[in-house]
Length: 103
Image (cartoon, rainbow, N blue to C red):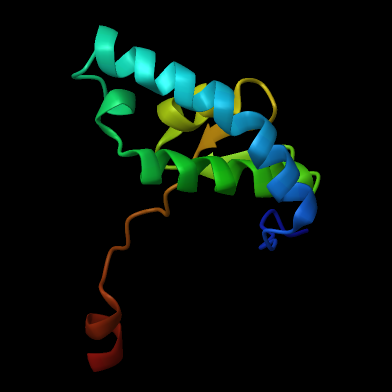
């Protein structure tokens, strides 16, 4: 069973994005004033928009979990619309691919 899926940004995702952006940008502007040093406040408007597009695409296609290395910001943006979990990192390898190829 696969746990990954690559979905396109379609009309359904665009509609969800439009509904979500107003609230997200209001929250982001308040954060920039109240806690300007936070990771969330440090993001540019374009990065926030891109993050929202990733989230809404997952929601529009029935996603239930979004895996990311940026769990804190994505959880805040998701607002309970989808579960956000840390990206599982691969186990460290004992040897590099080059070392294996040489032997």
